[in-house]
Image 1 (cartoon, chains in turn red, blue):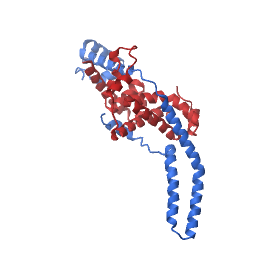
Image 2: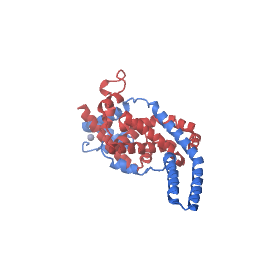
Image 3: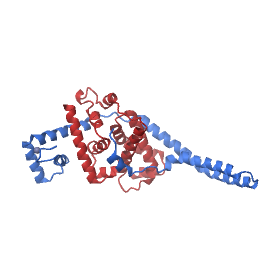
Image 4: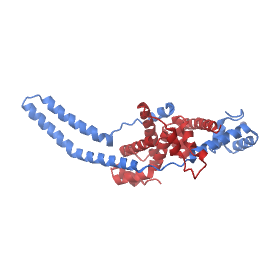
Length: 178
Length: 148
Ligand SMILES: [Zn+2]
């Protein structure tokens, strides 16, 4: 559900209530990307907080040239990738395999247990850039054009990146099946 | 990758629904007779549905709290600063002129006051206004990102 321009304008003027509405509208998107990129709940919480603080820090610079949602995607992509890079430099970066299983597992009663943690494991087997591209394309269902804008890449580079990422994913899947 | 006749680029176009009419028809016909392409397509489709399937836990409420509290705090500090900074600046000027009139080490006190003002600016306004983001670096990060 996109937020009305009015709300964005109010937030630009520092209206906390408008910021709260923007938070509610985009938390699922930001949380999804944060969790699927970091594959770690604690990191995802920190990354998602950083995303929103950055959104509100920069919101006055949003000029309504793109859709607000695309702009949110762009900041999310940037911030989460920067967050991971920063954590890796601080050497606090890790993907906890056991927690991955617990936190990604769909409720056991609901699904085949064999498929429980497949998503987390498949994503964990990808390189960071591949993971981001596949999250945007396959999970968020974005067009190549929107991904190009969100990731600051050319459409050609996005396509090539996604094709390669799919091939890595297919191989990861194949080795899990084996 | 691929059977030799078709490579994975075509499978990707097929998955994205981007093959044109005759191309799609030809590829579908090929799929019927080629086990390699059929296998790879099936693997890819299963893998893709694998990453789409997971039900994620909802975002914890403490993210909202953390963000909104910080915003409220920053806004409060910023408001105080609007009142405080001009007052501090005026005080600095007064102090400096007073001290220089008395010819006693004017540098130290003005430096001190200026440091305080800069500190106030830096500490609080950095949260609201600082443009420390190099958005373009995402290209480099995505393209050159290290493996995890
Ligand atoms: Zn074939």
